[in-house]
Length: 336
Ligand code: NAD
Ligand code: LMR
Image (cartoon, rainbow, N blue to C red):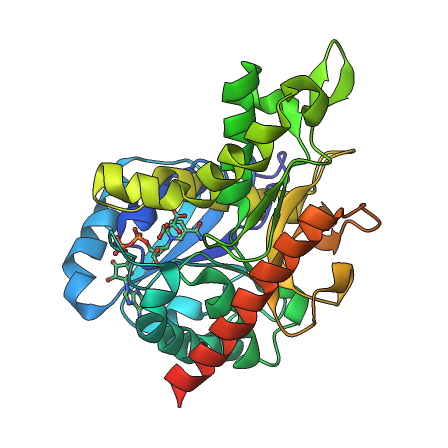
């Protein structure tokens, strides 16, 4: 109104919006969990023809929920229309992994989608669109999207490893019986796959107003170097086994965390993990979308520099990079 100086709405695209993650994330976005409680939003929801009716049902529910921040909903199966004027693109559309599959097993189905959607985003989205790829294999889909959308700045194309980051925080919180909000600065390095390296060497817990290293508090290097790592690496598979469906509410919530911190900034003294286009930091070759520790300010992320990497960690950083190199060539062969 005249007195309240309302903000312009931000347009958010969710692809695969009739799916599980879509159903969990759209109400979060409409409630301000992604862009803050004062930011009006317009939702663009894309899915494919067989899901059109169900997608329309999601639109009906969004209207029925009467979210005050929600200023418009477009539900469509037309990728060009879906991408029009989009400021934030959350790319969830694709096929999920089933029990017994690795994430790269869904490669051939999903990379061709990301090639096609790259062009539509380039043509129709806002010039400074921020892109988050959630669909698996997330890092490689993001890389393909980057390669086929050369006019979108490479810094604007990211993939989700915040779920793994949050899983690591959750494991430490459970182990030490501390509030998860008091744990910070874990790192997920590399691929959103079972080769990812969840690193606690720089992680701390706030105790009586001071930051104590996780390694000091856990005092069980054996657990931190083995079970902790494999639990986080295998958590996606454990959820699939338990639910017969892949994670959805935690993926949706973490995707909101990723965009919120990217747009609104990370708190002072703490970092988060994001899959970003490598610039050669920590000896990771450029040309891969790799998860690094990042801080964000004024809508820009930067890789945290100068962290000490011991020999154990070095091997793990390189192994997950190697898997991404292999995925990249597999993706290119799927597209040919
Ligand atoms: P889902 O099958 O419930 O939903 C996916 C939706 O995408 C479906 O409605 C489908 O019709 C739609 N779709 C398929 N092709 C499309 C296209 N070309 N354009 C638009 N939409 C299309 O799956 P889900 O459980 O919501 O998972 C979605 C993806 O996210 C999967 O690839 C899953 O593996 C991945 N995932 C990633 C993370 C992560 O942390 N990065 C976490 C959980 C799930
Ligand atoms: C997850 O980590 O939960 C998702 O990537 C789904 C999967 O395939 O594991």
